[in-house]
Image (cartoon, rainbow, N blue to C red):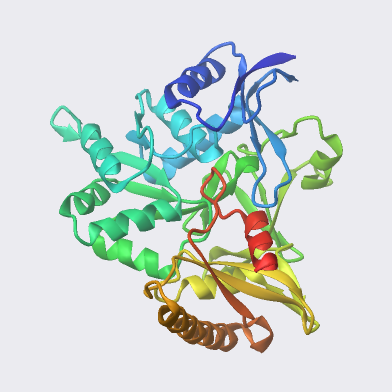
Length: 394
């Protein structure tokens, strides 16, 4: 049993994680425990254990082998090319971890955006990456979550340096959550080369790019659920054999598949994830996918950062609430409060029309809740446990 080197995700320094990961990938170890602070034992060949609560608040420790991480990095290189990488995500989460592994496989030190992510820090880090070999420019890559991209696009409207930084990358991988169509269109108009990725800690990070599985990855849809297989799959969950067996299935021929828990469909030869199978409410006797509702809502002007959660409802059993960041345009004072309420009533009516038109009357949100900011997890995803609590108490 190999011992793990503990590296907590909060406040973990990228260079410290990089050194630990390099020893785990290229040398004899020890493996790296990302997300806890106590040493445990794992099987030989383990490179990292990524501990995360996901969006549900239920902690899980995903065991990733050296072979799985390397296979994922090589598959990414085969799809988008090789070059220098900028780490702009927490290094102890799987997307950040993979930036480090890809850099190691390319034989290059990653650039690191330390501290708070801002448009200016992104510009500065991007400038430092510019380099060439034999007169040929070295392609650059980075991985972001949608909220980071939106922040950069907002800044790029008035700042040519941000626009130039976005255009300088051969590919910008965007994962973590669905990317609203308006955000994709804004990025394309600015000349940013966006690659939408889908994956999880259990797949060593993104393994489906722009709806197409990476080389060596197979996908199937069973009873509406997306399942994946390939050399990038995790070994399972640390200390949880029953959960491992429930999530990682074996066919009669021994083929091993990961149950993603996501609903998916194929359209025009591409995979499209439509939401979590368990992120469903029953409103008036009708099953409503909150992920589908959220996708429609985020496609509306000004609502790219909105979130949708379910709450109990005396009339319908369950209903959905749209959580919108920001206080609106109204200023302080009683008249402003009335104005804001009126504006929000109009906004909710527009949301209900859009959702009802695409998904049916039962899917229409019941309420709109404004918050200063949508709470997020360290990974950048919305904290849906906190959101449900806010919506239920409002």
